[in-house]
Structures are given as structure tokens and as C-alpha cells.
Image (tube, rainbow, N blue to C red):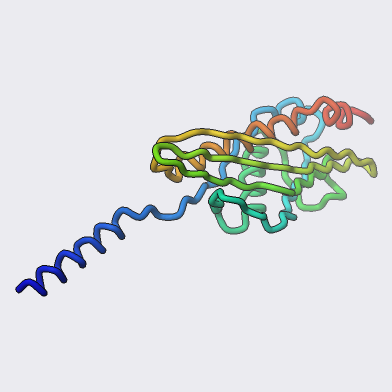
Length: 187
């Protein structure tokens, strides 16, 4: 009887510990660009490509939060949908486009550092934008960071919020860059 009670207690503790373990955090990618109207006045037909040239991350004591599979393709699809809602015509042939836009993800990561009562989520992003217009080219690299403290346990919504706020501000800033708008307005 004592042996079966001990076995029952050990199994119960194991099940409780498994239930308390948190699933790995994962973020969703869904940034929103708010500054597309001014660019649209000079570029109705746009070709858009997003590529990912990230290198593996050397991680310290922070835990890396993973994202969706094929983030470059997902980001490209989301941006194309936003451009379409702003009445841009999206084409695949860069030679026929008013603007050929290439976004290169150089760095895009989210890490979390857990303490007893709170977690700190760190986001880092570096994106290069290259725009081609009639044999002319313009490019710029924009870096962004975001840090947010959240109560434990941090969840996927916290991670998604930090990443998308950072990425939304970064992309909105890139698409509203004064030198880009001047480049687009040139004949």
C-alpha cells in the first residue's frame, strides 16, 4: 500500500510539473505601415521583394523567441496586401514597375530574459531598403530596437506586440523617409 501511494504521489508531482511548464514563446508577424499615401502619388505600379539575409545569432543568457516559418515571404505578402489597400498596383516585373522595392532583413530577433516576477522582451531589427526607379537606385539601412517589461509568465501576445510595434515603426519610417520621397519625385 505504501509503495503504491508513493508511486501515485510521484506520478502526480510529475504531471503537475509538466502542466506548469510553459510552451516556448512564438511571435506572429503582422506589422502595419501607416505612411504609404505620399509615396503612392508618384508610384502606382510597384514590384516588392523581401529577402532574409540574417546570420545565426550568438545568444547570451537570453532565450530566443521564434517566429513563423519563412518570415521574408510572410512579410512580403502582408506588405503587398497593405499596398493593395492603398491602391498600389503590384506587379512582378521590376522592369515595368514605377518602383522596384527590395527589403532585406539583416537582423530581426526577439529575446526574453526572465526574472522572478517579470520578463524583459528585447527586440532588434535591421532592414535595408533598396528602391530602383528607371535605372536609378536609392537605399538605406534602418535599425530599430524595442524593450518591454511584462509580468510573468510572458505569452505569445506579449512577444507579438513587441515585435510588431518595433517593425511597424521601422517600416513606416522607411517608407516615409524624406530622401526616399525626394528620390521618387525626381523625373
